[in-house]
Every structure is written in structure tokens, then in C-alpha cells.
Image 1 (cartoon, one colour):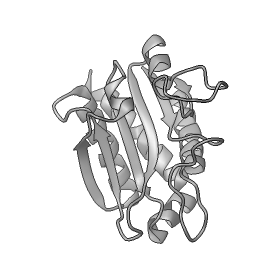
Image 2: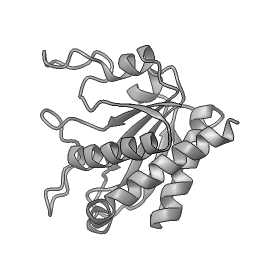
Image 3: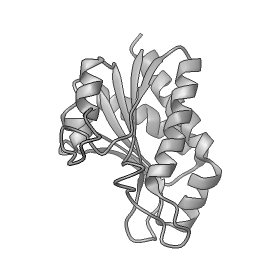
Image 4: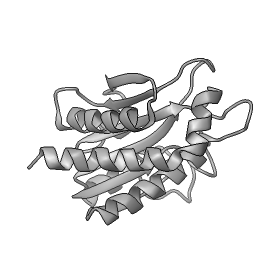
Amino acid sequence: MKVYINPGHDLDYDSGAVNPNSGLRECDVAAKIGAAVKKYLEIAGCECRLLQSDNLYYDSSYDDRPVAVCADANEWPADVFVSIHCNAANGKARGTEVECYSYMSDGGNLAQCIRNQIVGALGTVDRGVKEMPGLIVLRHTDMPAVLVETAFIDNDDDAALLTDKWDDFARAIARGVTDYECSLQ
């Protein structure tokens, strides 16, 4: 299986959400988890490509971002697409959710597999699988795609999980992808 991994946001131009108390940045957490997901999936026999960029679908204004994430995934072509993020709201919200284009699709099945693994392994608040067809990475990919909101970076308890258990998140995401792959056989 060919898995395209997109750690959310960008280390240089778009940090994403930031914890107001610790300064923990979403882009850094996503990069760390994404690299580990790639490692674990490659050990499991998957072929992986990883790209963290603010150019999702030819929407970057920076000249040093010539490759668009969604187009790259489509041209490769990937079998599944996983975008990794941290949620943020009001400092009180907690938990994990996984977003897909449609519940009744392979992307919905992939989202459920990843959600099950994260919630089961880390005991995060289960915010479920959510349909989000307007998201660029779900709308412009040709393969089953998900956006994983690992935990709330602006909640100090969830942020502690992201800091201390980042490898557990990576292992759970990788297991969710392999669970999905097994469900196809």
C-alpha cells in the first residue's frame, strides 16, 4: 500500500495552532508524529511519501513551494492520504477526531480505523469521525483521505499527551492505516 503522509501546516510559514502557555506549535508536533508514522508504516511494508507544506493545492504564495501536496499525492499515486494535525478551540475542549470527505466511503472507513486506534491506545476523549468535504486535503485528493485531529494543542492536558505520548499517536495512526488495509482484503 502506498501511503501519503501530510503533517499539517508548515515549519517556516504557518505554524498552525500554538499552546498559549507552553508555546508548543502544531507544525512541530505534526512533523514529529508524521515522521514516526512513516517509519512504522515502512516497517509494516508500506511505501510512504511525506510532505509538510503550506501549498496544499496550488494555494501557496511562496516561490519555494512549487509542489502542491494534493497534486503530488494524486500523481504519485497514493492509495491513501493521511493529514496529521492538532485541534484548537477554547483551551477547554479535549479529544481526538478524524475527518473524512464522506462517512459512507473508503475514507470514512479509514477514518474509523485510525480513530479507533488512537482512542483505544491513548484514552483520549472520543470526538468521533466527522464529514468535512470542504477541507482542501479531502476535496482535492483522488484516494481515500483523512485529516487526523490528534488532540487539542491549546488544552494543557491534551498538550501534555502530544508532548509525552507523540510516539503513541504515531503508532496508533500507523496501526489504523494497516487495519484499514486489512479490511480491504
